[in-house]
Image (tube, rainbow, N blue to C red; front, side, top):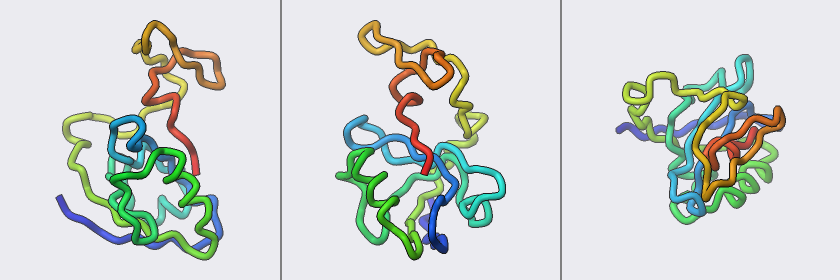
Length: 128
């Protein structure tokens, strides 16, 4: 697993979607990259783990904290990423948000904007 530093020149939007966080017991991960965006022009890939944001380790960050840290980066955004190698296991790295995900949490489906049930993991993917 290689770590790499990526710096995106601001201002945002940066063009990637983030998922996971300490509050979901999932590592922070790049789940989608918008074609033609600043993120797409960098070496970032869907499935990469976000190890640090602006030099701050993400181990203890909740989803919201990471999101706020990224949003507060105005001039440029520096990320330390780890290539998870998960692409091989998962097949398609970017998960379409409006696909139905049949995982309910305690019987409560989460809904996307298109009113399709999503599992918690996908319902909380945020575009930045």
